[in-house]
Length: 463
Ligand code: UD1
Ligand code: CA
Image 1 (tube, protein in one colour):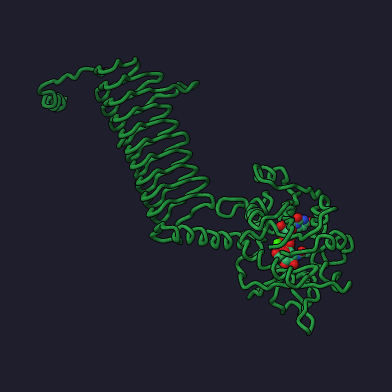
Image 2 (image 1 turned 30 degrees about the horizontal axis):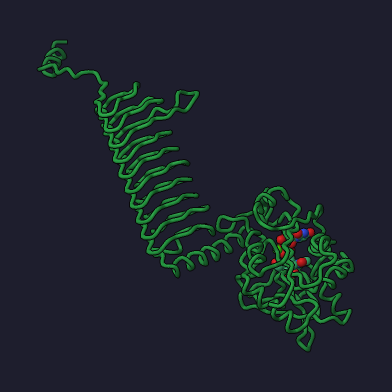
């Protein structure tokens, strides 16, 4: 495409209809604040500059933009979409080219559609081109009123529409391409004579018409894409559409979903080939999953790196952790933040790990808590082993060398070290460091009293 493009993203409103303490554009869709999707589109159409008009909870909107090349324009008071654009245009006084207007509450829009809009805008040498669409239920949207010759005459907001205009099913998507110089003058000519006493950007169409300028429209058939989110019902619909899009992308890249409708994967997750994912699984944040892994039902995996050929059995929670190639986790395991499992590690039923490392080939198969532990390779952790890492004040480390065998039901009272190749007998409470190759045993010796049960019975009869 030929030109200079600047994108303004309108994201200052509160969104009253969401009935929320959180500004509408910050509500997540597939795990990301919804306004970041139009920001991405602006990046994809290679805008020379991206300006976000912010207002409500501006600081949080700013946080969400960290690391991105987006300029901020603060609209202190939300006086309508035309006022928002005026705010955005403040830093564009000398700019000549095209301004694309996107809405922070229209997250499903794609760059393909904007490229089409720009192509029409160019071809028709228009002053403004509106992106429109036809919907089954146009309520809430601005209606596109066309002249008998088919040319677009004006846009009438739902609130200001009479019954005949309300019948029109072609609606304004709130997305436009404008000639920059025209836009910077026209936004000052718009008046707030309407039911909401707001400055409507939609009035720019009629203003242009009156000036004899060329107004075009590009009607897209991608109705889902241009859906504006105003309520939680629309939010849930957008979420569903976005998830379907994401899951389709993975399936096309070689991921099997046993039931794609029941898998919830955030936008920024990456998944390798021949991965199989069962229903009920939620994968969030910056998680990456290597080739040939199997994720069974009802797992939640957050900001974690899962290696190649990993198996995660049912009902695990994995947070901010790393699982090495070929390892197996679950069922019912909890990897809390800071866990690093090497290759071919086994973490089994009802095992909880926190801020712990397990070296290659190590195993903790049953009923165990390992916190602040550094565990070498080829270590066997017996059932019921517990690191006592907390004394009510501080957290202490347990260090276990390579090839160690920890028997069942052992308590390791940290800080404590078990040297390479050592053996800790079942039922021991380890309070002192164990030298390499040693046996540590700390349990009361067993005493067997012959005939004790019979004696007790006799005693009971006498009484
Ligand atoms: C707007 C359009 C409507 C269109 C619909 C499509 C106007 C007057 N109406 O209506 O024709 O069919 O979008 O979704 O333009 N915003 C600001 N500052 C403000 C007001 C709004 O930044 O002062 C932002 C909001 O945060 C939002 C976007 O502009 O992201 C649209 O505002 P909203 O109030 O949702 O407009 P709609 O009533 O949906
Ligand atoms: Ca809206």
